[in-house]
Each structure stands twice: as C-alpha cells, then as structure tokens.
Figure (cartoon, rainbow, N blue to C red):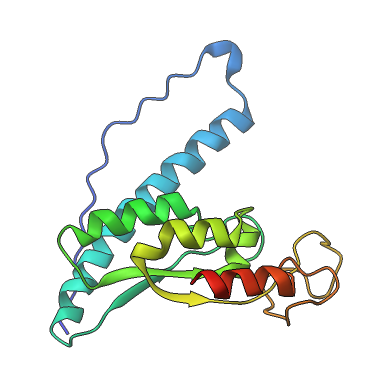
Length: 167
C-alpha cells in the first residue's frame, strides 16, 4: 500500500467575539467548533481515499455514526450531519453508506425509528442494540449493548418491534 499524504491548508483564523463576551467558555466553544470542522474535513478526505481503494476490491464502505456526548464522543454523530457527509461522498463514490446504531441514536437524543427512516436510503447496515443513558450511576451506563426490555433501557420491546416492522 502506498503512503497516504494529507495536506491541510488552514486559513488565517479570525474570531469575531465582542470584547465584553470574551471568556474561557466562549473561546473553548469556538476552538471546539473549529476542531470539529477540521476533523470532519480530514475525515471526508480520508474516506474518499479509502473509498477509491475499496473499489478495486469491490467493497462497500460503511460509516457508523457514534454518540458525541456519552461514551465514544465521536466526530460524526448527528444523523443529519452523517447523511450530509454520505451524500457528498456518494456524488463521486457510490459504494459508501451509513450504519445506523439504535444505541448511538438514543445517546444522541435522536428517536431511532424516525432517524432510521430518514437515513434508510443511505444505509448499508442497521445495528439493533439497547443502552442506558438516563442513569449515569448504573454499571450498564453507556453503549453496553444489553438486551431489549431491560429495566432502565432506552429501547423497549415495543419500540424494537416497530423498528423491525418498518424496516
């Protein structure tokens, strides 16, 4: 495999923050937003490179969106953002899609059935799993993939049934 070389040209950054609003939290938020944007652009470039290589092997590439605030703190979490990324990459590379994970959707505060329907045209895989996110003191807190119907679980048996009937 050849070496991958990525060049990033960063523009001169100018933060327009009124003097009376400059504080640590404002600067931290701006730096976080900028870091996320740079990370997303890097991810897009890397995925395009990998996608080209995957075509030679007739592989499909799948991006699994993750949570951004509970367990994995993923770069790509929000379903709308993931769909936007897949649309852009699919303009050139058709073998690219999404894996929708019901646990991650719950951790993102997104309703699994609603967002699976929304992302379905872009899906390569749907991962049906449960999680606990309301009780941070639980040993099962986070993306532990426990059974459906567990006490404190985010996805009930009825919700699972609705998802399966829909897909």
